[in-house]
Image (cartoon, rainbow, N blue to C red; front, side, top):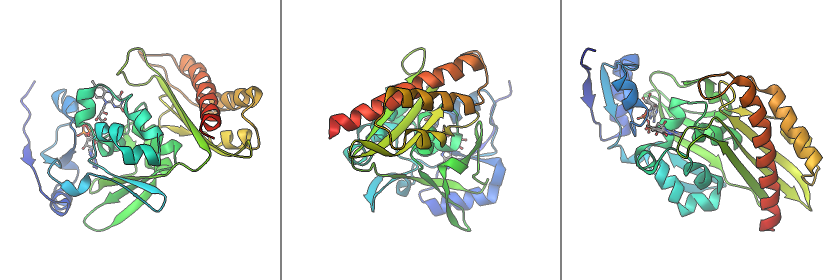
Amino acid sequence: MKPPNFLYARPDTLEDALRLLSEHGTGAKLLAGGQSLVPMLNLRMAEPKLLIDMNRVAELSGIERENGKLRIGALTRHRALETSREAAQAEPMIARAAREIGHLAIRNRGTIGGSIAHADPSAEWPLLAVALDARVELRSTARTRTVAAREFFTGPFTTAAGADEILTAVEFPCAPQQSGFGFQELCRRPGDFAIVAAAGRVRMRDGRCIGATLAIGGADATPRHIAEIDRIVAGSRGEDAVVREAAAAAARVLDPSGDIHASAEYRRKMAAVLVTRALREAFASVAANS
Ligand SMILES: Cc1cc2nc3c(=O)[nH]c(=O)nc-3n(C[C@H](O)[C@H](O)[C@H](O)COP(=O)(O)OP(=O)(O)OC[C@H]3O[C@@H](n4cnc5c(N)ncnc54)[C@H](O)[C@@H]3O)c2cc1C
């Protein structure tokens, strides 16, 4: 195997990082936590001419709550999100999902922006971003734009980001009053990527559901928002028959693939099981909180 051969730059500002990226285009790769990129470099699955290390760009880190939104800088580490009081108060599912990511050493380095840009269909942050209808902020030297997470993931490890764009932040809506969440994951060993995962939130008024959102990860080319679930559970009290109908509807719309971890059929069946569990958990947590 030939030795890797690339230039390395460590800009201090976002402006400098953007300029380097616009000059080198697809020949450059951004380095955030390195927890996915460094293994890819080792395996020569990525062979950039220039590595742009963003770890000194302080303006890309941080967690801020404003106007009902939680804005998370792209370079914010998984561990910071697992332990942030501000994030836990705004959307408790964030800490719940963060602790499922790999192991502590990985969570100490890996970043939310890196995970979303990497777009692994089994990863926790893409799933949460789709489930909660988050928005992804992208910057280039020419412009800033935001894209709905539900449109950002276009395939496995593929996104709507351009070669000259840096993902700068992710914005989650804060959890509404009288709502509860469910987060369920299937993996063989703690710390593994999910084989299938489901994340959802239900919103209640006077004991009846007035809105629901749910997405499934690991069972399709991208995390899938299952819009049908909102229609099925709306108006219900979370009765078992309704939850089972929602789970069956979710399993029907998925298009899973098989691999060494699980067959396509197993993924579809487990998606239904995890949706059932996630919805039960979500309805039960509203009851517990009210
Ligand atoms: C053993 C192991 C187990 C793991 N288990 C899990 C798991 O269970 N769940 C899970 O979700 N993840 C898991 N991961 C992956 C981990 O979460 C990574 O942190 C994450 O996928 C990538 O984030 P990063 O900050 O390390 O990005 P990097 O590895 O630095 O970059 C990943 C890719 O994103 C691009 N990129 C990075 N930042 C940006 C940006 N701001 N804008 C545009 N492009 C950018 C890079 O150029 C690269 O292509 C695991 C990793 C390892 C090594």
